[in-house]
Amino acid sequence: MLTRDLVIIGGGSAGMAAAIEAKKNGIDDILILEKDSVLGGILNQCIHNGFGLTEFKEELTGPEYLSRFAKQVEELGIEYKLDSLVLNVTKDRIVTYSNAVDGVVTLQAKAIVFATGCYERGPGAIQLAGDRVAGIITAGTAQKYLNIHGFLAGKRIVILGSGDIGLIMARRMTLEGAKVLCVSEIMPYSNGLNRNIAQCLNDYNIPLYLSRSVLRVEGKGRVEKVVLAAVDEKMKFIPGTEMEFECDTLLLSVGLIPYVGLLSDIGTEMSSTRGAKVNDQLETTVPGVFACGNCLHVHDVVDFVTDEGRDAGRGAANYIKGLLKQTKKIKVNPGDGVGYVIPQYIETDLNNDITFKFRVRKPIQNVFVNFKSGDVLVHKVVKPVLIPSEMVMIKINKDKLANLPVDEITVSLEERK
Amino acid sequence: MKEFTCIVCPRGCRLKIDDQLNVTGNSCPRGAQYAKDEVTNPKRMITSIMRVKNRENCVVSVKTSNSIPKGKIFEVMEEINKVSVNAPTHIGDIAIKNVLGLDADIVITKNVK
Image 1 (cartoon, rainbow over the protein chains, first blue to last red):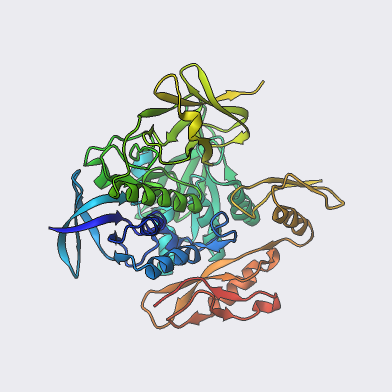
Image 2: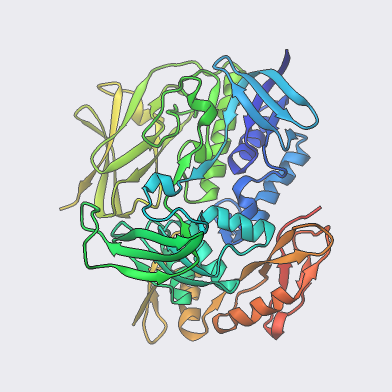
């Protein structure tokens, strides 16, 4: 059987960063498998700017950002295969992929990094009521039609969900001559970045209706009308609050889910993020199999995806070099007010600091973030504002984690009085 | 006193600016400059696409090299939509020089082979 030291599934931001970092850590036999016909993943269609502020200290568009990493992949001589779909992965790290040139290929990898990104929730996931007609599409699909293929998905648009892709598309479609009637968000707060509400909605006088969702879609063959209604605290529609919009398209921006199709099949422990559980090296519970980027948890800033990709690339290199010895197993739990925490386990002493990444369940102000092990407060940080749409990252020195009373840490929020 | 959300980076600071152009709430100098521009001459970067003539079903992404006055956004879009380019394209190629005399070029942001 063909062998490879490291196979990286997905050539987007996370996968390219993982490959580059593994190469810099002495791994030469690397193969990136990318199903699209170009490297870069979703950034190819994210033509807006705002990428790279952490990574390059400048503001780049998505294609510019990805090109810097694609260039490094080329310069470092890292092998990649495009138009190549991974068909199967086993827990013994046997990877099967296919493309038009190689046919179906099976190879044995020493380590695998999953960098497969995420996918959009669709009408089924939110139990969208009404007619099943043409013109109901996800915001990301509309973005691909427009920015990759040059087709505008509709002329009069209602957007459901205030995620960043929906906000970006509200502006983008407005610029191309469509009329965006409103953005409707079921939650009492927006799930997008504040700057996107300012520059994508407010700039173009597009109203944002909070605590409102689509009651039903009407149309024959194509969307003709979308009816919104207000919801109460239990997300039940309130009669008498209906608002009708004549439109031809309903864009859905109602959340992203890590794509773990091949990963969950091999028996990795899964987390509430719907990605795999990982340790401080971003190794899943299947030895030698790593995960990073949006297939681990959905990020809001690509710079952090790149950074996480590097962590996974370094972890995989450590594994291949036989450095990943479990020295302990500390379980990391989300506590009060915290949705999830990554990593879920701390198992090695290889990193000087452990960066805990988490999201809060709802917007909250003036809180302590407490890291507790049993009754011992290991670390405490004050945060003035935390919102679910912004991932929180807190770094703790490994010495603080050396002598814990129990093999568990819980991350929780405590309101400051 | 005016209050608005900074759009310079994803952080989205809540900026306040008074009549003497004193800015508070910013986390960096770029935020302070943004607040001053926003009350005197609001500007925006524009990103869009252009047709690629010699490739089937192909467009290439473009941006303004500098931010342009907010009131000129749709006029600049019209200029962008008038132009198509030939592949190969390279990041940084200028598609329109000094668009509408606004001291900004329309620059290609994607390599198309």
